Image (cartoon, rainbow, N blue to C red; front, side):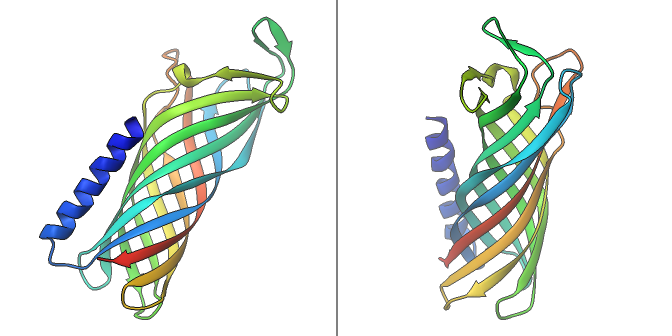
Length: 214
């Protein structure tokens, strides 16, 4: 239900902008992989590993000047991170193993300024901020031997900086493909524990996409 509301709001915003804007507007689809990590303070964790997840979403690009545009996206992201604790307990069972945070899911809303270099199949750089809305997290231990819902331990929102580089491949006057390498650096504490510990996100994403000129 939350996803449907976000998706509906995004499309309403896109069509409102395209209706009143006199500038070029593009609508696109994208997807790819991410390599996620956590910056954290937790004495029980001794080893931390990044894992490969994925993302997919929709976007709109609004031309501001010849080389400058505004990129607004709505993405679903699954981030996977594994940590090692020397000893912990789930349901009365002591475990000495890796924890794999699966279904560590966000809806993210990046708002970026994009600057293009070149006319045909240009390169571009973009940067701005992203807002992440937390959906769920589950813990998998020993490849699924035990699992636990971790959603209550996280806050509802993540906020951070986003920067990326990419290249556009023009197909015709109305269609284009693009590839991008992007990093999202979370700046807020997503740990709901008020006792001074913190967790902050970071993800490096490789994105493939298609844009259509409205």
